[in-house]
Image 1 (cartoon, protein in one colour):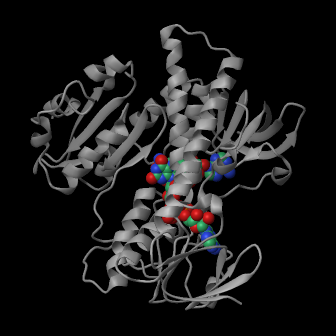
Image 2 (spheres, protein in one colour):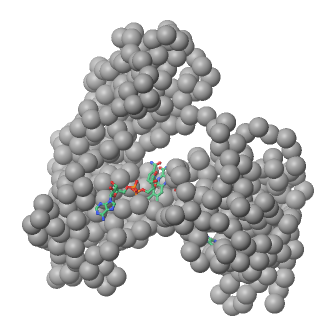
Image 3 (cartoon, rainbow, N blue to C red):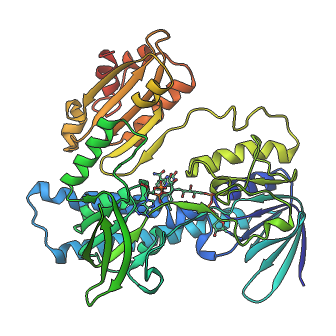
Length: 463
Ligand SMILES: Cc1cc2nc3c(=O)[nH]c(=O)nc-3n(C[C@H](O)[C@H](O)[C@H](O)COP(=O)(O)OP(=O)(O)OC[C@H]3O[C@@H](n4cnc5c(N)ncnc54)[C@H](O)[C@@H]3O)c2cc1C
Ligand SMILES: NC(=O)c1ccc[n+]([C@@H]2O[C@H](COP(=O)([O-])OP(=O)(O)OC[C@H]3O[C@@H](n4cnc5c(N)ncnc54)[C@H](O)[C@@H]3O)[C@@H](O)[C@H]2O)c1
């Protein structure tokens, strides 16, 4: 058996894993990164998550706007455009995957092993490659294995080639005429929005009666209205029961309010959540404790129940975002280098989130519901995006901008932007919250014109 000894072994080539590997190697540590699939160098985000999907949302937006210029679309044009968008997405992913690999693998001190890692004991990993099993002995181990889509139980799901996770649907070769999506979370809604813009007839099946339950009612209603405007139908209280392949695709049978119904679809995306990748790690051999959803239990320093084993990114449970995986690296790095740091999960600051429907819904800090629940006194300002000159220039007038301010301190409590470029603008608000910048500074800021961010002048004038 080939054996490796290393200062730090990192399982998973994701955002935290690769960033840690690069930083540790530059500080003279020997690092072994183990990645189960060459298609995943760089992790989920680059290969099957954020970037391919954002490439597709952008392409979908372009074809959607054609109609505004009087250009007629038909299924053939839609499909041709979709194929080109998918080709570009594949080109982009291939380029990024390769770049990510070399950025890490070409460093002195780093060894990348292609294989599936599992524990032999708390200092030893076994790595199953295509041809052999390797052994890696490490002083410290980082688990950054990410998460996997869960598919709820319904009959026949494993037998149909038309049932896809978000990863599999990125390989479609033709635009489905009728797409069903099970689950109205961030993945379900993002795919619904862009497939509708490409020209698919999209129906989302949500098993209860709520859409974005954590959001303010008026925010969720505006998003629903916009999705309907894009042609998306949402079936609430719809529980998938079984699927059956047909000549043209697949029949979905679902139960809704006690009644059994069916829909003829071409493809189905299942987007009902993602669970941490721990089940084949033989984690018990290392004595690492897991939580109820299979996540690795960590303390505020991201240390597992075993002192020299840390967990980063999706695998530790909690928020699943690339930038959280990146921020986890900032918590773990000083510990591995023996440096002092007071940065940990408790000192982590407020961070924004974005759901990439069209336009994007981006949030940071408190919304009205949360502020009320927390007993906070707040003033709120809300304006339609249509009031922003740049939005008119771009023909991107859907949505609203909403911001909450503490009347006693003048500090910003939170914001919900449903707007073109909301995912960019929200970073400005996150910065203001984290740096205790008064709302008046943003209100009186001198912004370039015409831009979406200059809307802060008018929005905050309303406080
Ligand atoms: C469709 C989709 C869209 C998304 N869009 C966004 C977005 O727009 N913005 C955003 O911030 N987040 C987005 N996310 C979430 C984001 O992709 C994840 O939160 C992030 O990639 C998690 O990073 P990670 O470091 O935890 O692990 P990952 O990037 O998932 O990396 C884990 C790696 O470990 C490997 N691995 C797993 N088990 C083993 C093993 N035993 N041995 C060896 N290797 C192993 C995997 O192959 C993988 O490469 C999206 C996710 C999806 C699915
Ligand atoms: N923009 C981003 O940053 C981004 C984009 C995509 C994904 N992500 C992350 O990926 C993770 C996974 O996203 P997701 O949308 O798959 O999961 P999710 O858990 O956030 O949402 C799943 C949705 O499916 C519904 N659901 C669950 N079981 C169901 C069933 N049997 N039938 C019908 N509906 C059902 C849930 O009520 C929920 O609305 C999230 O944590 C998210 O933060 C982030």
